[in-house]
Image (tube, rainbow over all chains, first blue to last red; front, side):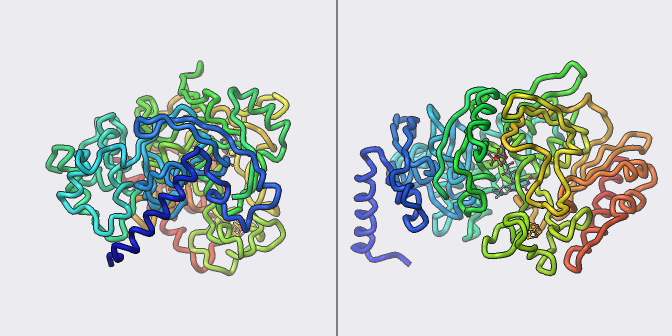
Length: 215
Length: 316
Ligand SMILES: Cc1cc2nc3c(=O)[nH]c(=O)nc-3n(C[C@H](O)[C@H](O)[C@H](O)COP(=O)(O)OP(=O)(O)OC[C@H]3O[C@@H](n4cnc5c(N)ncnc54)[C@H](O)[C@@H]3O)c2cc1C
Ligand code: SF4
């Protein structure tokens, strides 16, 4: 169900307001942690500085050390393309590329990545200049609700790079040969990205098209 | 998460010194297990020592003709290493059967060995669990325990160790190199690293507080047909109900370790000796002291059949 435009606008502007607060570079402790479970001494808990690059742009942040990379992206930098699903590494909605490799941004702390190069779905392409994988997902209808899609797309981009680099998977028959680009390989490699709408077969079609193969 | 302070260590000596200064600290490597548990307040370290900068991320040949795997080598890189694929196929296979591509890109060799059980009662902080809260009881005994241990368990805990990699390391006779907070180093065999639950299921390994794993070494390759067979509820991205790591030689001799059946990778000399006589004989030894529950008794025939299938494949 689509929300009425006005309500939608209000939700967006609230997020934007939160983001303005954070734009000075600090994620308030309250964002990283609900205040109810935070003991008094934590109110003055030390924050830590960390600098890394996100989508080609250098970022200097000062954070509560508990802030996950996912929360830093969404709450601290207003990069809400990356989604929070389970927050426990089980669904893949938070997948981003860290120094070119896909990871679950919910299971790592932002302060652990000084100097890193991070790419989110916003960094792959823009609405008027889509990354080929983004365009293929649109063309093949590789989603329904779209919530898992940013993670699926980041993961898919990395999957093709992993096959190219010769990294084997659970279904690779010969460990000592270059892995093949087959439907079975793509399904196995994408198993860390859950889609509740069940768009899996269209997702495989989209990735297959980008790979330029008839898997 | 409970508040914690955080520091990055630049060398194993620095990490050891930091651990000596802050005995309540925990090391954080990939963070894929520790942060999961910290979010649920099952782990509540007051201090984290980030070991990602220790430069223990290389795989080097040893003088004995084996491999020395740095504690920080990521699961993806270990599985994809050419030497591991060629000479220790069971290890590549076990790693690739675990978790997801994203998780394997972060998960480290040491962190994988030390990951904690997936017992659902351990994860549910409202339930009694001797591993999480010693003395509170075990909700799995008499509860829903389909995933739990069938052998080597105790009256206090029937949890299994969830790692796939550790099962392969066990069949390969790996050893673990460590440095203690005061700087002393030692080598522990994989057979001894993990403990059975006994009366203290909260004590899972023989590591001392603040003892850092620096590397895992593999002896020289033993050849043979190397297999890892994992049986689970989904075709991918699920923990094992049972798993079999086996190395079978052309003359039929070999070794086998099981995952998903005990508090540690399960291997017995007496069972290895039965390898030429087939799966039934081997399983008979592995499960000689088994005490399955109503819900998990299926693991005994399942493990035997998984082994039979591995042996059939090994014979070609
Ligand atoms: C959804 C999901 C599915 C999964 N599925 C599987 C699966 O099918 N099979 C499987 O085997 N695993 C699976 N895993 C678990 C995964 O393999 C582990 O989380 C991972 O291997 C842990 O490694 P890490 O480096 O992230 O450890 P961390 O989370 O960083 O640390 C784990 C523990 O090891 C300690 N530690 C880390 N490094 C050292 C060191 N050098 N010296 C001493 N102590 C150290 C830490 O203090 C901590 O106690 C899954 C995980 C998730 C979230
Ligand atoms: S089996 Fe072990 S981990 Fe599970 S509830 Fe019992 S004591 Fe806790």
